[in-house]
Image (cartoon, rainbow, N blue to C red; front, side, top):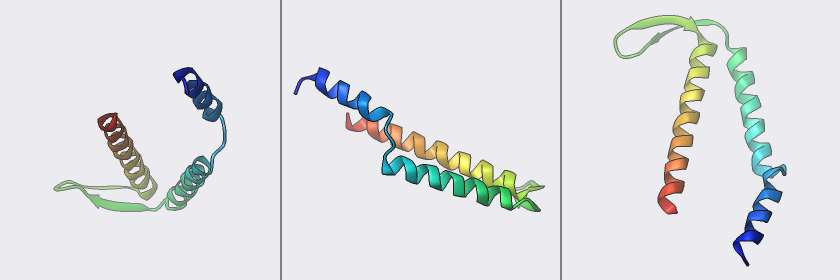
Length: 82
């Protein structure tokens, strides 16, 4: 199989809906519902300072940091295996 054939197949699959993409979308929706259902104020202590903030902001920040770390690790592992 030539590189041209595999590149064409990758482009064909790029726009398709896969079970993995459906699962990720479902998890993202459930995460957002969970975050925005929890709107009460909480006290959060990060090392020394203590702040009061809405729980949904803390959950959203944690989710974004987790996604960023996951993206970084996945990207770094992909480059290392090439």
